[in-house]
Image 1 (cartoon, rainbow, N blue to C red):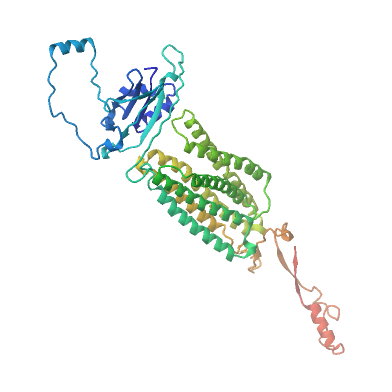
Image 2: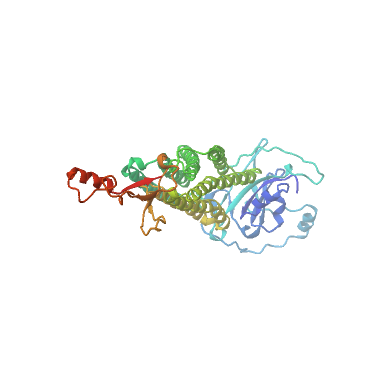
Amino acid sequence: MYGMIGFTLSRGNFIAEGVRSNPHVCQLQNSDQGVDALFFIFDFAKERLNIIRSGEIGDLRICYSLMDCPVLPTVETNATTKNPDGFIKRIWNKIVSPDNAVAMQDYIPLTVNGTKYGTNFSIRFFDDQKGEYQFFYHNCFNYKSTNGYNDLVAVDLTVSIVEMNRYSYLSAGDIIKPQIYFYLAFLFAIASITWMHNLCRSDSMMVFKIHYLMTALVFLKTISIFFHGMNFYYLAVYGRHRAIWAIIYYITHLLKGALLFGTIILIGSGYTLFKNFLSDRDRRIFIIILPLQIIDNIIMAIIEESEFGDKRYFFWAELFMFIDLVCCIALMLPIIGSIRHLEEGAQTDGKAAFNLQKLVLFKHFYVLVICYIYTTRFAKFLLDQTLPFNYGWLSVGVVETATLIFYILVGWKFRPVKQNPYLKLDQDSRDDGDEEDAVALTSNGLYENVSRVQRIQISNETDDIPGLIGGFDSNSDDDGDDQNERATLIKSGREVSIL
């Protein structure tokens, strides 16, 4: 079986899995395995492209052109019985093997122009032949032969394929994607307008730098998903990319991806929310993860546009999916650090209300990020692997809807409204029977080291001493009203706050 060159047209991923798991085995050898596939093998001596039919798609009708293919499925029957061959004919057939191959049924004729071979054919699929088809090129000369040596042969090959469904050039699982992207772009646009309206109406003292980054992020997400929809729309209508839409989409997608991870890191570290600096650990995470995420998105975009039949396709795809997952997990580190910091700060009475409020907020943010990662990474992978071929759009819908919900919830949690860290908590100062309020302090530097405010009552201890020094003599009328007022001031108690 070595030394062959050809193609396979298979339904399902049997051939693809064979290429991935057995890279040293030529898949043209599996023509007798009963897989749903057509094997096209070049026969240069007879100037043919031989067809070996296998599995349930063996009845695929191959035509010279699409106009020659029947619109409705036909059942071929033998209307007449073939007359038996004569005695001389049977002897001749034993000497020379007869060639009963039928064109477009058992082989496709090749046209020869010097050392160049060419052909073309069309296939029309009917309802019982639906499925996800994969077209692979195989050069068995480049596999190790039985004698242990490689007979490498270079082939200059050009293949032009037109794939079209009834009303779209997109595959069955992608037909609905343009509408999904346009609807979600509209919803993201509403979210963007609502967010910017909220910023404009908010107190400028409550709007931090992180809110402007969030504005840029949701705007980039809106135009990115819109351009993605335009890219799919032109693919559906014309069967090819429009360069301008594809370029704009990839640029906005890369910027959005970098800004998303950067914003999550900054929010998770509490930057501008309760501190105006980044710790050394947060800076290291920011410097390492952000370039990795940018590179990862660039390579993933290249992989999505490349052919998965390439030997290195699965290796690079799995590698960069792993890097993306590592980046997502590393996003948790600043959030976990902020939660620990706030838990420690909550032990301080003077900052209890502020830290407890922020602690609850960051725990909610931690849960949101976890759910977002699980939905957009793990759930997407499971959906891609388990959904039928014509429901591939469902994975996109779930991921983008989860992203929209994530943006809305994070925006709601960290919206620029009047903060309420000045909640009055009931400190247990009830030993004296009085209910006193302790004010929770923020990060104001004046009260940074205050652990507790205690109120005490100081009274005049000389009240019981008779005379003008300690009090006043009620029987004395010589001092007049001034002395009475002065004595009253001396006797009156006063509250003194001691820190």
